[in-house]
Image (cartoon, rainbow, N blue to C red; front, side):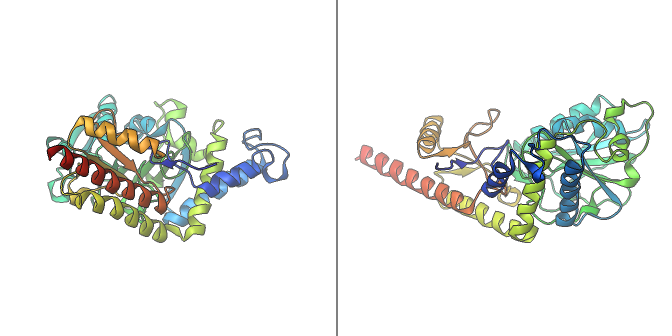
Amino acid sequence: MKRAYNFNAGPAALPEAVLAKAQEEFLNINGSGMSVMEISHRSKDFESIINKAKSLLIELMDIPEDYDVLFLQGGASLQFSMIPMNLLPEGKTASYVLTGSWSEKALKEAEKVGTCEVAASAKETNYSTIPALDELNVAENAAYLHITSNNTIFGTQWKDYPETVEVPVIADMSSDILSKKIDVSKFGLIYAGAQKNLGPSGVTVVIIRKDLIQKNAGLPTMLSFQTHADNDSLYNTPPTMSIYLLSLVLQWVKDLGGLEEIERLNEQKAALLYNTIDESNGFYKGHARPDSRSYMNVTFTLKNEDLTKQFLAEAKEAGFVGLNGHRSVGGCRASIYNAVPLVHCEELASFMKKFQAAHTRKTSEQTV
């Protein structure tokens, strides 16, 4: 069976080797005679799976010892509420940098919990840029500074991160975690829904500095970071299949060469598509400003809506999946997360050039 050229924004492509491994072990995990979906989350078999996932993530991201790794549920969207519930006390202010729809949603949820301010916003540019670090206006009594490291809808990405002395930086890294090397110690908390680079939907990774985990008697039990830290992410039944596949993806990254190799490949894939856009003489137009371009989500438009529909229809016929832009902005979007092979990006770049040549030739003939 021929695999699709999968450019979906999320849930997104998974490494074919991971899917093959999961298929091989689907009916019999670790010689148990059961699927991973059937074994107890309190069993030794699952304990080894979740511990492997945690240790691999710590190794690959070089997570310091004074951080804890939690595997939660509810996606990044639940973290929009859990973070202010746990980290925004009365009398403090949460600072948010707005770089797209997801940061807007994070702010909206935080405002239901406590006092918030906008530290910077790129909304006036239709979120085509990332604010400069010297433009950030962090509240004097800030409990934390929140950023969204990569913006899937608009195709922008932070290249450098804010560095604050006293104020913890919180980052939603759902769409670019594990795509490049970062210094985890610059952040108080990193969170990410798994369905882009880490694995399938269903599990959310939270990397939190241990001094930020504090008891809050007023919180519902399941909404406290302390609950999940004290119980090694096993307070309730976790998404066992998602954590198992997460562990396989992390092993795949390690076997590939770690984050240095992943970062090199991601830069190469992005360059292929951005070069195609830049060399098209305006036939394709990128949404993001060049210095803010995402290496995960390449967003672009064509000259008009009819041409865009024609491009998407012919791309689908050629086997390309998920190239429609988000419904809120339209256009086109190629999500090129870690598991998207380089050859798929080469095929897309080739298709884009052929489509442009055919349309240009057709337009020229009609003019004559």
